Image (cartoon, rainbow, N blue to C red; front, side, top):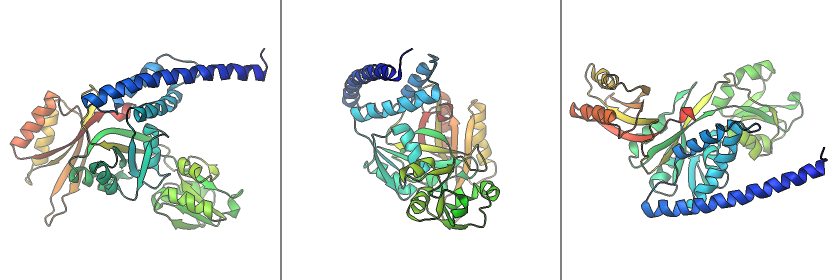
Length: 359
């Protein structure tokens, strides 16, 4: 049997092969980037990335499961995209938020990130082309839809949904204290705090002073800077501020998930496994919404989300955000939207994109 030094030499040899092959891969990436830029094709192709992940997962490698392959190759994809063309990604900041975590999961460590203080600012930066992509939350499976995102989708017609990310949301309890008894103050965003009440009760922390912060990332920063404190925050925020994690996954609902949108300025091609988002304003008459929904039923198209939003004028009229399976260029979808507009509905297309719930 080889000793540890011999095994390390073997690893070094494999690492040399890996880096040489990656360099060779990037040469092909450069050539593809030149073709894309000369023909005006999009750099970001989530359907191509999914196909690569699925193909590699099907190899059934003994020591690499799908999660490990994704961790490796999403970083490779990020490096590849930046070689084709440097990327700037705007997101709901600050650094260390779950939006930051979602953005990094797709755009990797090498991309340039632009943290912004509110959701509309993300739309503005993408609309002004100061950022090629934006990442914002749109709904949580326990808290519901994010109204500001829904409103901005209608207000910024040149900003489209180009992809979606479903991410498990896990809160951590982080502190520089060695014992819970030493913690005198807990920092957290109120939503994060309220999602961890069972943990706080079980560990006799309900009476500990709570200070609300604008984000869980800021909570981690405050806990890092102040003695005898703790933060309820994301794993990425704790790492960002070198704050030790005492407990992981402390949320009451371990199935807590948030759906994020990736925004940009282009239209995706059809993949055969797409979703489309629209805003629809119907006549303010009995049965108007029902008539619109029946059009989807008649064409056999499945709706995945329906949410109303106030138009915010003097009267109490609403507009409907709708997600459904299919692409805007599918003939069945064209039939529905053409008929809907003929009978007086106003339809705004928001984007057609790969179904992210299957990634």
